[in-house]
Amino acid sequence: MKKIRIYLFSSCLLFFIIDRISKSLIIYKFSNAQISEIKINSFFNLILVWNRGVGFGFLPFDSNTSYLFVSLFIALVNAFLIYWMLKKSKIVESFLISMILGSSIGNLFDRFYYGLVPDFIDLYYKNLHWFTFNVADIFITIGIVCLILSDILIKKKI
Amino acid sequence: MKFIFKYLALFFLLSSCTNSLKQALGMTKADSPDEFLVEKRNPLTVPPSYDLLPPDSSTASAAVVGDLTTEKKSIQDILNKNLKNDSASNANSYNASTNNSQNSAEKSVLNNLK
Image (cartoon, rainbow over all chains, first blue to last red; front, side):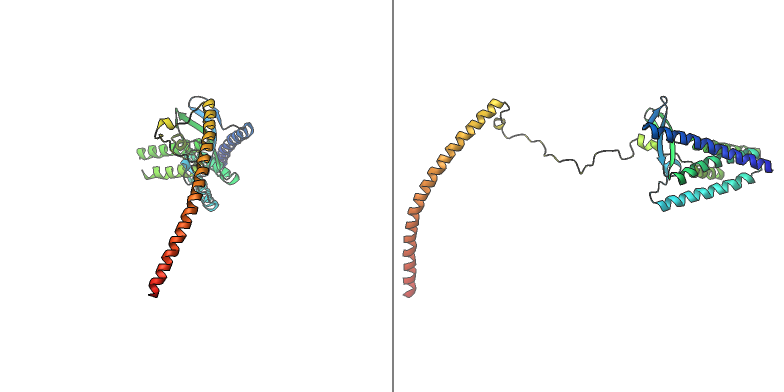
């Protein structure tokens, strides 16, 4: 049991490090080269956008009090995720939660360190751009979709 | 299905994707110039007669300047003549009016005395 917990926290740390490395590289690249956009191909760009709000750019509070309140609430959700990760009986689900937790801590770190979260992956088709996101968002999305699917499969079996 | 909402709320809180879609669709305010700093210009109007339009060539404009100076001189001559005439007529009329006013004043005083 103790070994599993170590693995879970290690995976959490791994996703956090992957997220931090990607963000640091992009911030370094954009701040040194004085560019606003790196075109990769016809549907994928790298563009540095700073987000003050939560998912989909919602709750972009200008006042520091509201921003701090939202950030503290996210920190509370992260604490709940740690509890949930350790409580789950299935190792796969615990691993998925650790993936979500590591990435979420990555975004939370930026919230407190920069005061904003950097987003840089821009997917688009012609003039239609999808929401700009980062590596942490990819892991969070994968984790949540997998958790939903596992819940659906478990309920079908029952 | 309640658990899906729970996961979606979690995703909404933890992720941080930004809506560059709004920018792409032009739903945000663009970096346009301040409308209050734009100089207002009067609307274009059609002149009442095209004969009154000023000539656009430099020679024609010089000719116009020459015409204007001669016009000025002639106007000044007319004004001077008029002024002389006016002063002469004014002097005559003043004398006449003073005589008339004196007569009328005398008459009114006499009437009151009666």
